[in-house]
Length: 336
Image (cartoon, rainbow, N blue to C red):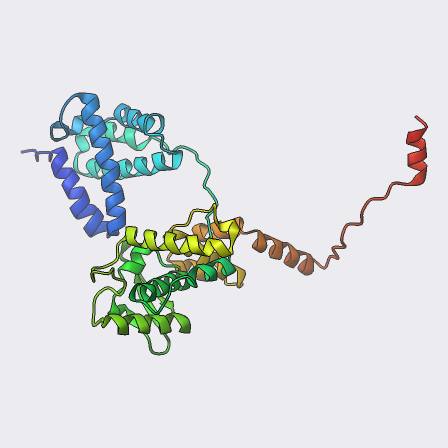
């Protein structure tokens, strides 16, 4: 007796509950990103096939439908190639799960998995130079409850290079204030890492915990005492960034997000001469290639590398002398 094939709904549910959560151990942020991408795809498929989402079946998930969805993202929704590729990655991941449980449609799924990502230019990471980052961190007023929290959060993000989701999930029990001061960050894929804390960071964290009388739970909270949200972090960061721009006019036309402080931490570590592999572990990158993006984007680092090359090669790089035309040449040209 052949085993019955689960429905599309059953496989979608097992994909999120069993595969993403239990097998891959993805973060809640990644889970939401995959959820949003597949929700858009199913809504598009239902509209195109003139049926409800609940009526979609496994035989409907075909390559031509996926290709039409990808075109819709760019042409109708105005998404970039990078966003298109992210949506495609979510579909590929789901279809690979479908294939593992439904071999009768292996060729149908193989055609979808063969759809390539679109080539796109990876933008250079946006970051703040150390003096700009310090100007931002100096904006909160630590004599107020909100100011003490904002100062601790901005300093924590710059010190650790943590993703905003990692920072917001830090609890009192994750902190070690005694020597050596450090914090345990819960990164992507359930991977934890330890990150050292500066004495200044420890000091403001102590003030924050004492002011809010925290015994346990998340350390960064809003005015109601609930854990701070990603939108809350974006709001307070934007508020303090606008104030910092008064001291640094070149910041006025820049856009800042919580991830910019992560990039800024990486660049500061590079400028301090820290090895790329150490920075990879510091930031929790899966590959050193990801960390290397910061090296290619920083002109100061390129300048130092070039100067180091000249010194190690034993070459003397004399400054260029300004060109001076000879009098004979001028006379010659004037005679023409």
